[in-house]
Length: 201
Image (cartoon, rainbow, N blue to C red; front, side, top):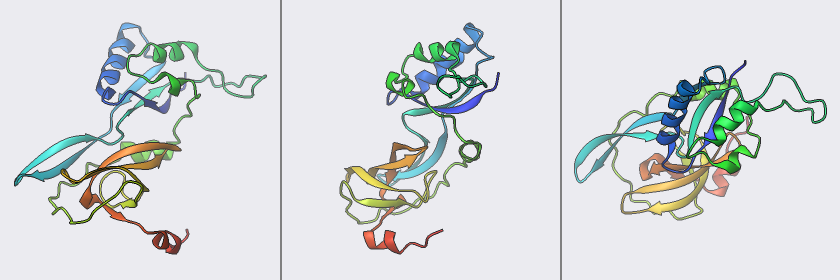
């Protein structure tokens, strides 16, 4: 049975719980034919706090895990024109603690191979100590990410933590809005004029 990669949405902070549950139940329920790898993409980030440097492992996609699974049959339903869902896989996901049920009802689409390759080949962010810039960010500011796994993406600031010098930026990944935690120095403000003058591909 053909397996494809999917982005599985989880409750915030329960990515590890979902991964552990899936791996354990695949062996227990003999689901190897239907469920393959389950990954939580991570990156190493070095930050300096109170003069001390430390390296942290951060999730690249908070609130999501990547699962290789046979969710759809190869053929198409004559009535709908869509590939029928593999009921055993669907039920397995519904019974996985921490998985958001509303995500399952949206008939998720598999990732394109180029998206899978980009994620699996992502190298950890280079641990570089950088000074915190004296720039004030506000909610709804448009910023471009210049460092880390989301480098090159533009999004809107949804939360600002000036004490820690961190932002939460909403970017579009796999046609979904994904919240990304970044440091001040990893982004730059983008004005409307800058966006209009960017060269078109």
